[in-house]
Length: 462
Image (cartoon, rainbow, N blue to C red; front, top):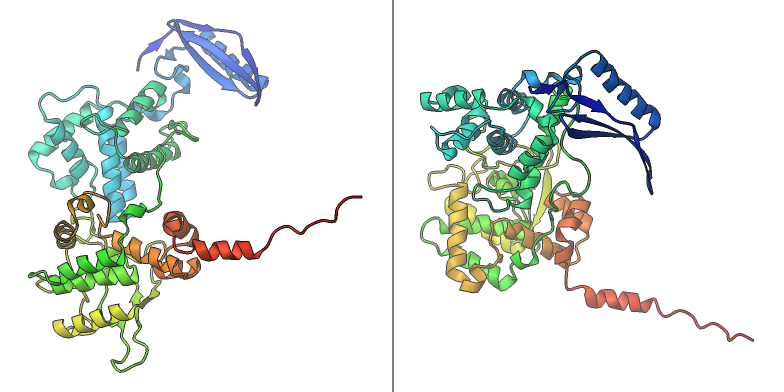
């Protein structure tokens, strides 16, 4: 840590603004000015007195923090790499596979930004891969090859200490790194926001364990890019487009009928992909074939998101979890449209499925793979849609089938509270995501407003 004894402490500067008066202590270290604003003169006087006392004791000042070395936290005694590994391990056992992966993705560019020098003996892509897949993976760290271990030892030796976070300029530099991709172009706002969220948790962990005095990340509006959770209306499918896409999937030679039933469940029942793949035959309540009401019921109680075998405790590609945003053993019951009832009944009979079997299976009876689902949907779009439609957001993601279903429910007049229950969302989230997609009710709404009538005519004065 660089220090200096060349210190000058100036008088307190008073600034009277619209929001109140600010008292700023000013001092210079080797001609570089430092400032510390306070809300009261008493606080400013106390802080200025501490600086003057330190100079009288002959104490050195840090050129990184601008404060007397006695004020320094434990940051200088721990380097960033060791802290990041410690933070990863602390988070590992209490978070999901997806969260573990996101932590590794966020810490990797931060670590590269906090290297004293860029590696000359290793490729940048190899450094990032080693950090993401081994250093910040508690499960795999000890499995690293000798070459990766050597690379990580180099990173550990060449990483700045945690005192770097006490330098505002360095903090700004790291945050700029989080906002750009490797090629220098801006990163997606959602990615930046996710990385900032992970980094903020890491900084709070550092404060809690007395490694940093305070969280150095800037707070308030404008510190993170704005993101919108609202569905892009252009991604929604109309009935004809959905019918053509599902029909093409059904006629697909390899596994087409199984995938058709899977996609139809998302379109008619609004299930998430990770919920649909986890359903068993017993979770489908079908009416008798000769019953008048052909609506079925789907009991959704489990989700198995695909996160990768390197990030799960079991070593499986998918991680078994409860429903999103609900208690561990919670369930929800969703009505199955008569068209879906017919599709699922035929699917169960054709595949000769038993109550304990997975409802949607891969070719060998295993759980349907995400790569198979995405590949089939992408091919269907390419074959069915026009070139302009294919290059547009129209049904671009499998998840857009769920978005279309929930939008249709809302447009059909189903109360938002009921849609939220069927979809597994809260009402505020539902409205925030789908409010822009609600249509077809304007004429009726105008009539209701018009029925209220005009203001009554008042008697003429005098």
